[in-house]
Every structure is written in structure tokens, then in C-alpha cells.
Length: 420
Image (cartoon, rainbow, N blue to C red; front, side):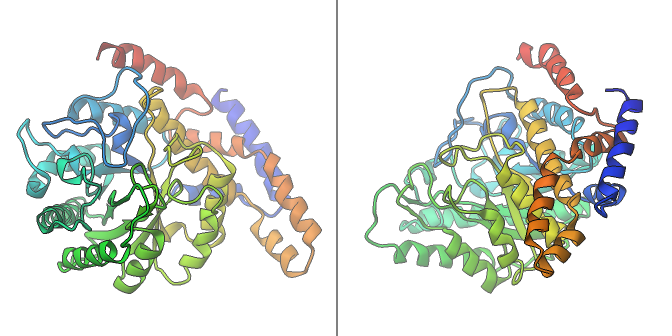
């Protein structure tokens, strides 16, 4: 579709939405304020650049062996540049600690320094990106037992406490350098495959570890802390120490941010419904967008009903500016760059669809007990021409509309990925 056709279809779509009291131009302006945090680990199947280069472990599993994954820092940055070039808007990079620039040297997790991420900061400045950060408490000999910050072994706990402390320091350094607060997220694999007798002990130890970690305070202008819960994982099917209830209570009492991962709850549980509850009491919240299929399988995000429901709640609650939105999936069975693009575009489309809802009319219908009108409006919007508005946004941001980006990614695969 050429630009003239995009403009023509957008003009018709603008008229369509106007009849419901929706200003599509304002919807696009608001969409442009959304910054997704694109996860680096999709590019290399969560291997990172530690000297060991070990496969993921500790509750993490990537399936697929599609050729072309990034093997070096330079390759990952090239691939990320390619992905960002097909995602409209200004966004962020989400780094895990194992992606440091270690120069081929052995640097254990409790020894990492801000200097190991200096080159990432310089790259981000060139790419006009901001950075978020994550401690990496998996894929390590000291996490193989299934316990890190809640381990009964004091030496193991000390090791991981030091790692997370250093990650927070690195996050603050990144935030200062890029003049934008860096969100530091913490997830640990601690739990039990079978039914434990003692659930109190591990959670008491985790609380003690967190209290020690957070003794050092940083300015919110430099970094913020989020805690990511989970219902179950590989090797922790029966018990997870860092449950939703545990981290939610800790975050509320300690002034931290709760991170909700769409794949970390029961399949029948509605994550979208939690937002209007939690944001009554929390200033901010973090979301990890994933797509579980039967289990926490981290499939590539697409425009599912669940994703749209989450976006709707964020928009309806006027909480875009209070929500940190990151992608978190890893699929090694398809072109990894294409996976980034599909996932990011789906997330942005979901937010756009929500922004195009006739919110005022829906609110009035509900307030006046006109439930048939409410139902009819919600159903009508399912076939509204949001795609035409999306294509206009792509053109505005100098990105290819529709599926034109696919040829570019396939061309990059032939020129670059196929030679790896």
C-alpha cells in the first residue's frame, strides 16, 4: 500500500471514529508517548556474553534452533538496530546482567561493574534509546539447586545479594548517563518441584535478602526497582518463593514496583483485572508482555484478546504514564528479529485499539444503565478500521506500514543471518 492510499484510507477511518466521538489524531499523539522496553534476550536465546556461554537453566527454557542467532555483542546490536528500524516510536532496550561487555574475560556475577555496560550506554546514545536492566539469577552453578536469595546456604545467599546490589548500582549508573530513570527488575527461580514442608523459612530468608539489598537508596531519577512474581516454573511447579502475594505485599510496604508477567499467572486468571485494583494503591506498575500457551512458554506476543484487555485497562484508567511496558518472550524456532517486530507491533496496536475506543460514550451508556448500547458499542469496535490508523502512524514515524517490513527482515536474513 503506497502512502497516498494510506492517507486516503486514514481519512475515511478518521470520519468513522468521529461519529463515535473519537479523535484519531489525538489517539496517535498519545500512542507516540508509549515507550516499550525491548528485551535483548530474544536475539540470542538468553545465552548472554559470559565466557561460559552456557545454555539457559534454572527455570528458563528456549525451544527451537532457527539459524542466525546473535553470537557476539556486535551481532546482537546489529540485530537490535534492524528490529527497532521496523518498530514505530521511540523505545527502550531491556538488558540482562549476562549481556555485559566482558572482553572475553571471566567475570562472575558478584563482580560485575558499571564499566562492563559502558559500551551499551554509548550504543544507546547513538541509537537514541534508553535502557532498563535486570539481575540474572539463573543459568549459573549457584542457582542450580533451585534457590538463590532464599537459599539455606548463607554463602549462596551472600553471592546473589551481592549480584543484585551490583545490578542496582549499574542501573543507577545507566540512568545517570542516559538522563532517564532505569527500571531494575528482579526475578529469581527459587522454588520447589514437589510439595515442600516448609514455606515459611524460604520466604523469611527472601525477605531478609531483599531488605539487605535495598538498604542502599538511589534517586528515582536514576533507577527504580520492580519485583517480578510467578505462580510456577520449570522445577518449581509446586512452590515459588517469590509469589504474587509475597512481592505485592513487599512492594506496597517498601515503595517498590510490582511487575506482572502475563505468563506468570494461572491460565484462567485475568491479569488485566489486576491493574485497576493495584493502581489504586501503587504509583506505578510494570508489565512483561508474553504469550503463554498452556504454560509459561513465552511465545511471541500477538494481538490476542488478553493483550487487548490489558491495553484497554491501562488506557481506560489513564495509566499509560504510570505503566512500564516491556516485552518478555523468547522463540528460537523463527527469525528472531521478526519475532521482536511482530511482538512490539502487536503491543503498540493493542494500545492504539484501546485509544480508539469511544470511552466517553461507553461511560455515559454504562452510567445511564444503557447496557445494550454498551454491549453493541464494544462489539462494533471489534471490526473498526484501526488498521488504517496504524498504517498512518507507521508512515508518520517513517516506518513501513502493513507487512512491508517482512521483506526487509527476510533480506537481512539472506545478507547477514544466513552467514552466521
